[in-house]
Length: 75
Image (cartoon, rainbow, N blue to C red):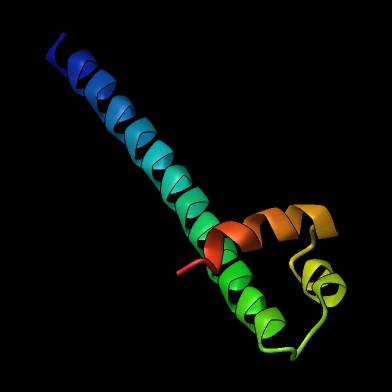
């Protein structure tokens, strides 16, 4: 019986680790996307790229990029 309980705990730990890794990867992707939008927004403000080009590089529509940009560049 003790071995069965150990197995249950080990499976739970493994599942917890897998969930934690997945959450960490999702957070890293979101942070990377935020950094990309911030940099592209600065390039737009500086006149280096157009909103259209920045949105394309961020893989967003222009309107979505402008919404994100307006929240990111008002420092």
